[in-house]
Length: 447
Image 1 (cartoon, rainbow, N blue to C red):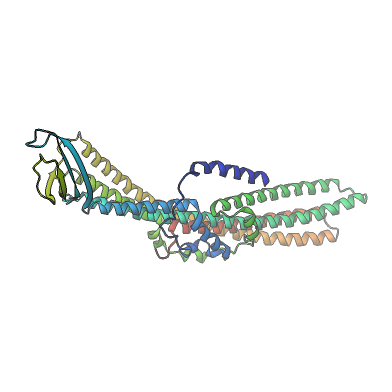
Image 2: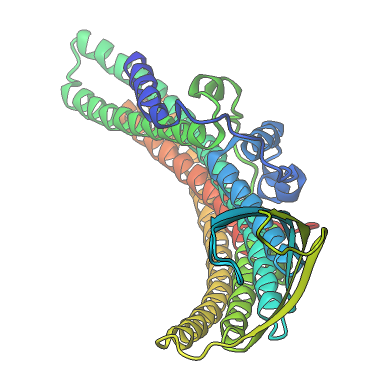
């Protein structure tokens, strides 16, 4: 653990170097998403700590913060696109010295300053299409922001379920190890008393070694799960070990799945993002097409000027108003190629939207199948567990009567432990399948 802490500290120092001289980051303008928006991911766990972790994830997870900053960028782009449709006013000042003025033979000086306004009337709709594309891009990034949060919180909830499943399996193995140790102690006592129990003792030791190895594997997987949760939540492993709920998972109910409406898919943020991307691509195609049409712009100037005595100048203030009509004639096929590229991107976006819908439908169907499979397995393992528990009881009674060896009791206890492992795994699989269903259909709730 000490080595890991030192390694992580060193890595943090190295990775921080590129940002050591950067300006302090400004707080994102995007408000954090509401925890209640995603509560369907963990509500079935009945774990208050899950909601506390989720709130921290939404505030601090770097993947979510990155998407929030991207949404900030998209909103700024939308604002800038809208600004291009409005008149632009600049302050200008100039000074010159030369003899290029009309009617001037000697070098003269001229200085002028004022305000210059420009306005493109957007007859072709090019600027309007740019605004539509920016707004669609903002809607896409807003959906991607929500999708990133949903994905991260789904991984967090999966980690919580996995931790509880592994904890239940570890408890089952620990109970089995305790019973096996009692059997081994009894066999050693009988062997010390002169009874020939060498074969049975070796068999018991072999069974215990396998069980201990299985327990070590479960413990290692539990540690891996905590590290994954630390990565997602930013909560140190030590704190997670102290506060995580390790109780047995609740029995998954069939009503969980039937209570989730399929039309919830309409709010799936990944599907919404793909749809918005299609709208953006369509608007960009319109913008590329409009670039081939003429454009009309107005310019105006109002200011003052001062020149040498040899210059004949009008009185101050000075002003002008002009209109300009421009149309592309020859550009080497650039505009045509840009329009073709925009049309191809629109087709890509259309296919991407269809793919997103298909993926969501397939993922939801797979999740339902996984839930049904887990329920079927759990029912079978529960029946096997009941039979194995009865087998342990009968074997213990027969061993007390001297009718069978205690090794049969040990074998029955090992079978019971394996059944408990399978029940815990099937229970966890049901919870994970339900989380996958919510992930595929979207968080639901108000947007």
